Structure formats: structure tokens, C-alpha cells
Image (cartoon, rainbow, N blue to C red; front, side):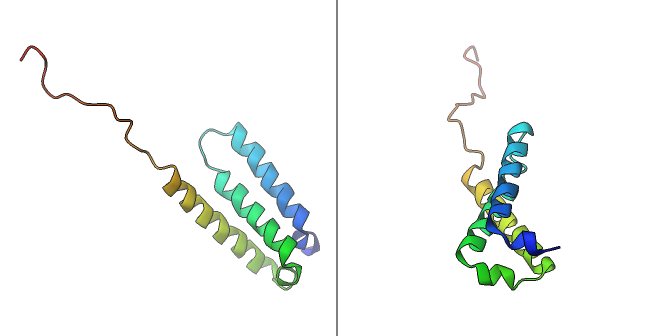
Length: 94
């Protein structure tokens, strides 16, 4: 059952599906999952022996951990910044 999860292109396809869902869904909810799947796909492409030796639970934990790390990195990169608009507390006629 897990043999298809050790193939690199399956993880790239899962990442692309999450990317499509991200375009259709409001907000940046699935972007971390997309990046996590793409990173697991790149790891599977580069280190096929490492991915093949992992159990299903370890592979899902790797995906979840990478998704969480990428979500946190995106959150830090795209945090709300001040728009530079000035706020006035006094009226001009005061």
C-alpha cells in the first residue's frame, strides 16, 4: 500500500493538488501543505533510499513536520506589516 508514497512524482502531484486547492480556497491555508509535499517529493527524488526505509507513520510525520515548518516560515515572511498610514487623534478644528 505504501509503495506509491515512496515515489517522488506522487508527492509532487500531491503538492500540485494542494496548490490548486490553495488557489480555490480563500486565505493561505493549504500553502504550507503544498510546500511540505513538494519538499518531501524533492527529498524522495534525491534520497530514494531514505524515503523507502521509512514506515507510513514516519513518512506522514515527515510530511506534517515539513508542512508545519513551511507554514511558520510563510507566516513570518508574510506577517502583517504597517501600511504606513498615519492616524490622527486630534481634529483639525480642535
